[in-house]
Each structure stands twice: as C-alpha cells, then as structure tokens.
Amino acid sequence: MTMDSSQDGRDDRALDALFEAGRARPPLPSSAFLSRLEADAVASLSQRPVETAPRRRGLPRRFGFPGIFAASGLSLSAAAGVIIGFASPDLVSPYTTLSDTGDDIATLYTFLPGADLAALDE
Amino acid sequence: MDGQNSRPDAPADEAPDAALLVAFANGDAAAGRDLVARLAPRLFGYSVRVLGDRAEAEDVVQETMMKLWKVAPDWRQGEAQVSTWAYRVAVNLCTDRLRRRKVRGQVPLETVPEPEADIASAVDRMTETARADALQAALDELPDRQRQAVVLRHLEGLSNPEIAAIMDIGVEAVESLTARGKRALAAILAGRREELGYDNG
Image (cartoon, rainbow over all chains, first blue to last red; front, side):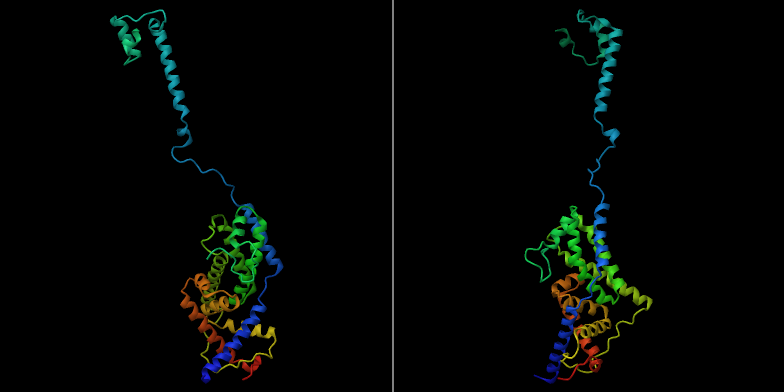
C-alpha cells in the first residue's frame, strides 16, 4: 500500500465519521412548520373543484334537443289536417268515397302530393 | 421505481407513499398528514444542507408539498416513487435559488481550493455536534452540483441510481460528482485540521 492510498483511506474514514455525525443530527423542521404543511394539505383538499360530468360535445343545447323537431313536425301535420278539413271536408269525411273525378284528384294532390290513390280507394 | 417506500428504516407493513398519495387524492386528509410526516423532514434536511438557510429551506419544502398535492389526483402508481419525485422538485427549486444568489452575487461559490495537504483520519476528540457543524461548513464551500450529490448520497442515504433520477443525470455523472465532492471536502477540512482536532494518527 502506498503512502497516498493509505492517506486516502484515512481521509475516507474521517469523512465517513463526519457524514455519520451529519446523519445523526439532521436539520429538523419545527413542529409549527409541519403543522402549516398539514394545514396546506387539508386546504388543498377543500379547494379542489367538485367533479362534474363533462360538457356535451357537438351542437349547443338549444340545437341538440331532438324533441323540438318532433314537436314541430306534429304541429305542422295537425295544421295541415285542419286546413284540409276546412278546404275540402269531403276528402276526409269517413262517409265519402274517393271518386276519380279530376277535381277530387287535383284537390288530393294539392294537400297530399304523392298519395297512393289505389290504396285510398280500397 | 416501484412506488414503495425508499426509506431503509420503513416498517414492512407501512403503506407505500404512493398508496397514501392516492388515498389523499380521494379525500383522505390523514394520508396527507402521513405524507407530510414522511417527506417533509427529509426534504427539509436536504434543503437546509444545500441552501444553508432554514427559512429558504421551508419555502422550498412548502412549495414542493403544494406541487405534490396538486399532482395527487393524476398520480399513477408504479410510474415513479413519490419520494424521488419530491426530491427532484426540491432539488430543482434549490438549484433555482442558488442560481439567483449567484446572479445577485450573494454567496461566493465554486471557490473550492485544490487539495493542499492530507487530512488525518482520527476525529475522535471532536464531539458529534462539532463534527456536524464542521461538515456543514465544508459543504457550504462545495460547488452546487457536488454539494447536492454529496448530500443526497452520504447524508440522505440515497442510491446512485436514485440520485441520477433526481438530478436528471447519468449514474456515472453521480459517481463523478460525489467523488469530486469528497475530495473537495477533504481539501477543505485539511485546512481546519488543528481547529477541528484531527491528528495525524
């Protein structure tokens, strides 16, 4: 063993003794500081935002309500029925049979374009 | 990194830090208090030794813990050790403060002398308190990175791979920093041999 390595070994032992002393006497936080940290932890829990359902994607709510279209269609159909009833009561009377006269067919096509005459005639 | 406690003295049946953090994220305040008791003293010890200032060390620890509470809801077990994550944050905060000091010219750093003489091996005549004080005084003179590595390795008792993860460097770089740090400490203490009661045993 050389002089240098022997000295290095003694230096290492001296440093190890200092490190051991340092580990035995670590700087300790005050209890007041630890209490402050605990209070921070509790406060962070209470400040956390409440979990809510994620927002809907796509159209805004007023456009995304499907019933509005159903309601609109139903109202339109009812209005059409009332108009037909006033304009040509014979067409919708259960006691009237559909004739093949030009007037009846023209009236029918006015209010029910694309109607199947054969089906109505049965 | 498996999310287990990194403390060698931790009881086997003690809940891992990560489990406590998840419990805290789910509203368990007691788990948060347990984490404070486990982590804060270690982070404080490290910060005081690196910064040499208790008030600044408290700021660092408080900021680190606040960051931990903030990430708690998103913490995924198994990805990292809570203590490693916390040390890493504290190390970075300390580094920022040391850099700001340099800019302001508060503390003369990077002025470690080359080894002047050998130091003797015997420190028997020194009291434990005197040894601890001498060590802190010598640490204060080390370059920042060497001081951080030496404190983490020899005072906090972390492994080289843990320190590498904390300091975001390779294991070889850690070994180099700690070796140079120890040599520098020996050089600093050599100049105080008589004062500290070393002999030439």
